[in-house]
Length: 102
Image (cartoon, rainbow, N blue to C red; front, top):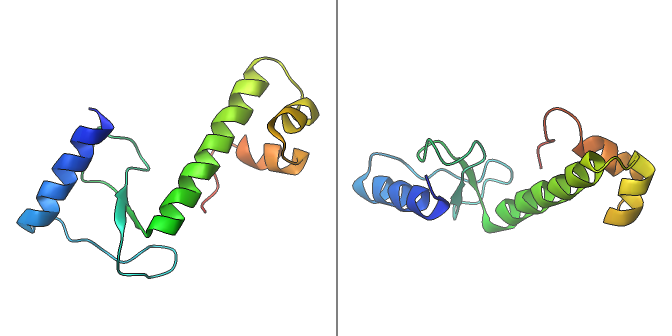
């Protein structure tokens, strides 16, 4: 399922009242977007995040993707950190089995 189609189905479910928009899971703000943290195959399974925390989570995932790609090319943690412009400790955090919550 595409991201656009998943968003459409979620928005239709909210409009129909079958899904209730919740406050941000991080800060409690009432204005939220559904974040498909677990993928798009289950479009109604979302984390409700305010715009700020939604963007922050995407930033973390983007960093993680870059680090994983660099490590897959055989770079050490230090080399990956240098190329990604982040600390070696951050590389270690991002390459754990489960991404950290933002």
